[in-house]
Image 1 (cartoon, rainbow, N blue to C red):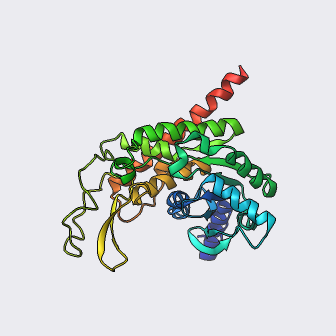
Image 2 (spheres, one colour; image 1 turned 180 degrees about the vertical axis):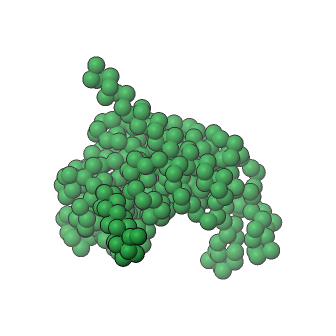
Image 3 (cartoon, rainbow, N blue to C red; image 1 turned 90 degrees about the vertical axis):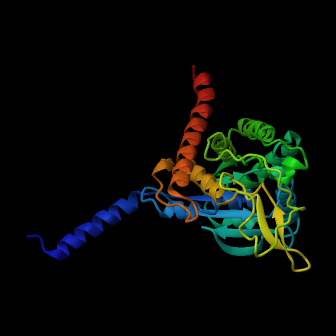
Length: 324
């Protein structure tokens, strides 16, 4: 009979050996609230699997565009007291305010650094120039060995005020932003994290086929708190379409968003990032946010996996053709 102490020692050695084989990668997302959306559950997903590990940093300014990232970088280079506009998260914990992009780039030996355009400009091709090149050059100045990756953001909900008031069709918006992100990726030899495509693929399924409604958040009879839970059904949406918020007078009123991701969208984005960077099948992820049903979570895992696989296959085709 093997002594208990020897058995426990053996188990500890096996566990330690397996843990040592998992390489930890360091990922920095440079962007805005959409980066936050995609990163919110990423650390929890990594923590729930034994075959991958990562440190996730998020450098964000609300509504920040490529040109604004470049503007603050140049300000900071000219005067270190300026350009410190970022909030900095690590594994979703807020660790710094009023931080410069340079400080965050130098804070870790990042393996991957992501860039993206703000959603309101993502479908406008001209807004990527010359700022994509300038931001890439700046990142490479301080992290020359990191792989720069393009984070493809998503189109707005069909019930977003931007879709309704701006006449901004979500499908058309997706087609344009998808083309723009892949164009700059091709120009700079970068890979694309296909989150926007995952949103589009999800919306093509019955579970996430969210339809246009006639609800007007500015003109309705809902009263808080009696109607707190009587907002339009958003169970099929990937976006934060409607929510209650106090106005300046302290009165609760319904607000409209429709472009930021809700819990389902945040989970989908994180699953795409996870499989993209780890190579681990997103369908095997055990973690899910509590508010999602098992069926919803399973659906999003499948969509994330299939989207990443398709993106990888599509990106490999030009290289294969060039090699022939």
